[in-house]
Length: 173
Image (spheres, rainbow, N blue to C red):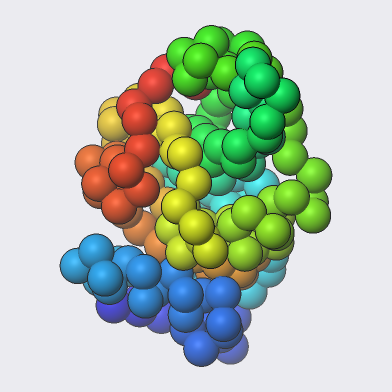
């Protein structure tokens, strides 16, 4: 379901290829979310929260990291963090039995997720990503996540994020 506001300030991006992938993936998980198409790009949790009139803590910020295994191999890791939190990379690396968790480059983000930074959704990636979901998000009835484009977000819940991503519940800060 698409929620529309002022037609001059919002545009329907549901046909944008990246947004369509997210919506199709959500539909495959039997999710019909409220989607908002915003007039300005929301590349940070703070900007998304301001645009939606909520707190940054209600944003499920999609952060992509390069998880370095003890043998040197790299695995992409998606951390869905409350926009009000910093991610403790060393803590998460230890909990995931990784040697290190390093910030992914913009090219790695696009390759691993199919999305540009600012529009990285929790679902719709070319291949499933190892995913961590910040337990703090459970303190909100609803949270908002990027929907494949820097001008689009969708409403979800903590439990739904765990279900649709196969994510692991972790305190990220």
